[in-house]
Length: 104
Image (cartoon, rainbow, N blue to C red):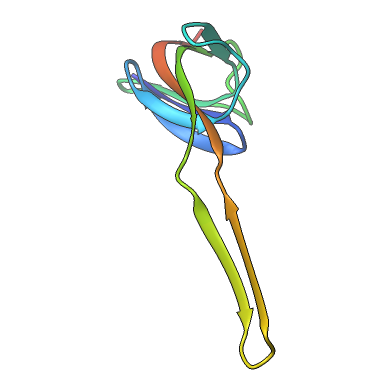
């Protein structure tokens, strides 16, 4: 059984027991999180596709940790114009573990 969830503007295919890094969400480490924007639920041959979300479907997860990804360097330059601009960015994330996928 797997589901396609939407969180943080992105879509993820998740199975029970999976760990994944998503955009930062509020919640302490060890807290349970309910993800209710489920786009698709597949249970064997039974496929449920939402329009746009599946009504009554819920994915519960546990917050494992919070952190930040590696730094991404942004460098802009115009040749022969003496224009150079350097910038960096580190995106925050929340690592979660999928506990249960339920669909009604």
